[in-house]
Length: 439
Image (tube, rainbow, N blue to C red):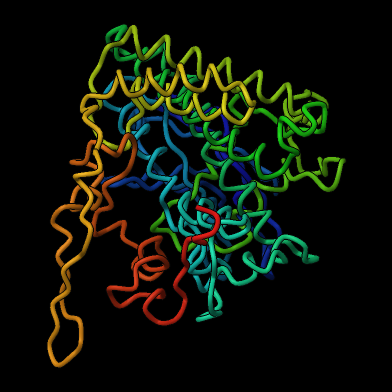
């Protein structure tokens, strides 16, 4: 039994497509769909007798996450296909902001559990940032420790026959890009003020640009080196993959994420497009590095315009406001070696920030007090730098996320790999250090 896909998602309905792959030793006398939500379960029986069938389910709640499963019944029992998660279309600004929060939180999710093929070097955007530093020239991994990131540091994780690092980086980013595009495709039809619509669209455009910016830096030549080199697909349309958005709490198998990656993954200078449902539409054509940067600038410029007109305060440190959009635009200009534009947008970011009183040298302590017991350090006094410990308080932070206890990934986290003061991979021999000669 296979739950093939979900399609035609609206605010209150969905079509679920199934395929009976094995009759299990007897004729199938019932087939149908089971939809599960937080407080409801809906079953719809299909009237056909075909192995391939589609069932339309109505009566769903707008802006809600559901799980769909197909099933088949014969004299030996009932068999279910794999479950597929999907979200119904939101109809209100409140629901749209909830989906925006979920989209932003995917930046920090530990998406693939260790036993399912991921690892403790796979914990969202900060793991990609750390990988880039380690594969550059300004960070040192002084011992193998437990092995996490050692292949990245040795510059061989992406060169194996099955380059999981490249696949996960590619698939993770396009997954969130698709969520941003899904948000953009429905926001104009929701109930809400003009300012709310501008705010949501501005944030989604900036997030889309941010993720493409990281991808083009990883998978393509630098803009200043060869702007005519092959770029990456700049996906500005919803690809219909919302039903495959992965949940942090789901025990998804490794193959589930790679289903998404098969539609977009490039091999060398050519795309492997065999799994692309949009084959022939041009939606995933790579273009050049220059074309990617043209899209980046257009998305961020529109984001800045919308966020400025919306004039709404940042509701959460993870939300993208005008200052952050300018900051991202400055980074893109810097990568393009357009230093005047980079300086202009950087200053605009500082000016737009709610708290733009940046630290001065007096805010940084010359020494950190360490408290010992029997010659063992038991505590530290970082009072003068405590503002760096939370994204919600320090003027030095423009953008961040408050990790809740439910979202904490413990050892599989940026802090575990970087901070040796506590029980962590860093304290157990896997500490990463900035290279003093490169700073």
